[in-house]
Length: 306
Image (cartoon, rainbow, N blue to C red; front, side, top):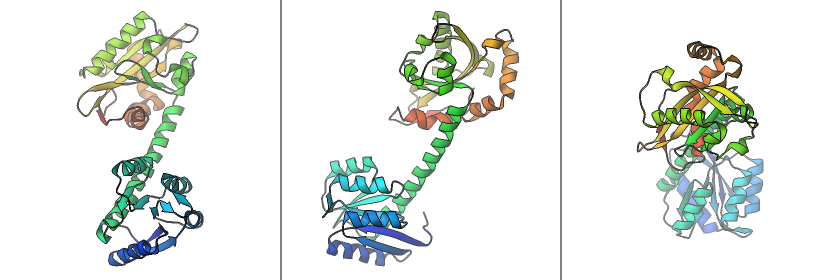
């Protein structure tokens, strides 16, 4: 990454000797200009963050007015979008893992840092924070798209439990999202509907290559008062990078009022429906960050929603 212009650095460090060493390291970095604001207390650092713009914070956790992880938490709360690098004299691997897990970008041990390592850490920290920001914006855009779309959307895991349901899906069946989450899909259909859905899930989980029409199927669901709701569903499987089946994303449209229309005609109608088409093209990417909130391993997926 090439950083252009002056890098504004907030150094929160009460030890004058350590602060001097950090300043000298910046002078040894010849390919950038830096503007360092030095705060000797946490209160001074927080005030600086409220009044000035910074690219990076270098933070000592043992300060006269704050010690430990609470020091980081206060800075992170005031400036969640600014990358924070922890400077410490303690070599504690477990603590380093914990505080990076809390949101710190790096953990550097005083006495083991030179100008090259410091600059590399700053570059990577700023870049990672920038990527995180872009991902949050993307996730929010997709989340809004998923929630505002007129179609019902749901994700079932490998055990057929609903781990994601959008508001429209819940509304179609007269439930709240909270009432549907973690329930087996069979709770919302009759025996015939359950058999139909599981048949298509089996095809999806086995990764069978079928004609597009084979993945678009009619399904009878039951709403809260046990009244039938006929929907047209399209399902797409998701897999871990190892090939293990994770579950499937489905998108559905209520066709109760048009049940008599032939399936082929319904497919044509859906193809021309702008909302449905948009979701079909973007659903996997839209759902990926939402689904990963409930999973802790990366996955791969079919790029075409069938």
